[in-house]
Amino acid sequence: MTEPSDAKNQGMAKAQKQRDAGRKTSRGLISLPFIGRRKRHFPNKHCPRVVLLQGPVGSFFRRAQDYLNANGFDAWRICFNAGDRLYARSEKTMHFSGAPESWRNWFNGLLRENGFDAVVLFGAERIVHRIAIECCEQAGVPVVCLEEGYIRPGYVTMELGGNNWRSPIAGQLPPPDFNAPRHAGPKAVPAPGSFSAMAWAAVKYFTVRALISTPGERKLFHKQKRTPISEGFYWFKNYYRKFAHVGRNYRISERLLEHHDKRFFIVPLQVHDDTQLGRAANSWNNQKLILKTIVSFARNAPEDYQLVFKIHPMERGHTRDWNFVRQVSALNDVKDRVHVLDGGSLSLLTRHSAGMITINSTSGLSALHHGVPLAVMGKALYRHPDLAFCVERGMDLDRFWTCGFVAPEEVRHRYLSWIHHQCLVGGDFYAKDGMEAAIQALKGRLEMALKAKEDAERTSGDVVTAAFGQQRQINEK
Image (cartoon, rainbow, N blue to C red; front, side, top):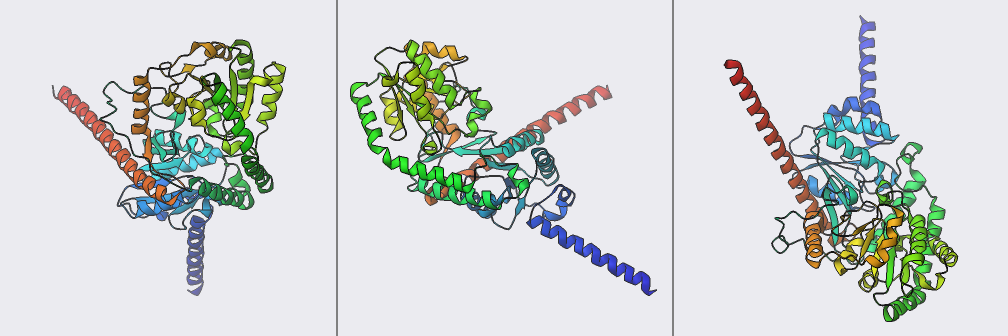
């Protein structure tokens, strides 16, 4: 009689060890076998359940999760690397590492088995987010996508389903019933110190991510995998050039404004590993844009016009684009007419320019605001023939220098008001006051998304009920 009892006790002890191991797994990396134990991990649902994926660098998603949990939501978080964990709570947090297809299977199971009502993410083009959006579309789960504000400072972007070229209103004009004065947009929220807060958070995030993340987590990094030493070197160069080039930038800008007002074209270059420069770029990148623009300018622009390339402030220490600009300019005999800036006000230059050429930078909205000709090469939020000169092939750019197309003022202002109303909320992702405003706006966006989902399900249910009723009547006859 003692042997069966001992075996039973050993079996119970073994089961208890397995349960304890399961609990430890829920706090660490969650592997695919965890899918079968989700029902034990998640409590009963008493309110809308939301999951947050990767957010902006810093504490924004941690604060947002706390606020949502305190205000009628059951908010969870998924971390993908050590940088995410640095800014995450230990409670209601899951962890994933692995290949993209493993993530697809894991996330599909998470959505379908655990009653998640909505997903929040930052940057629709990150690989984990592209896959998550596809899974949500199949499961009928709304996705609130966040991005840096299309118009800055004081605003952030919050849309359903995607941002930029993935925005639900990309390439569209306002509907006929949109009335700009009646649909007042959100007010900007001042956020002093936002850039310095973002820079410090980015240093900590990417340093921790590079040093501590596991090999499995590195498969889903959304930025180039540079070492902390090389990244630190590039940012040291960025700050050195920021101050060392102040005088040169000022002199070039002053000469352009005084002697070439409305007789220079501006080309804002984008961050080379920006996720917008992927499929949305239509195969364009900074180097190809520089080459094609200079060659076309040399052959087709009026001889007394200038060309100005503006390097992105985040790219100042990472790029050698100005060397490439000088080489291509010299080969095309326009070296004295082509300039490079890595500082100064892009808005001021745009206002006094003869036009702007961009791949798909949100700076194109500044060109629309100031009423200057705009050429867009890639897929962009504002790519529409009634708003911009849309380049289909490289040779199309040859006509831009003299076409002078500008959308009518009423069309431009109405479109920008629509963007304010549809896509933007007041706030910031890095400065404290701005974060509070953005988090409250996020709660409102989630409530709107869930209400729209309920209305759609109710309408769908009514249609199905009516169809069954019709069929019943047919059967009775």
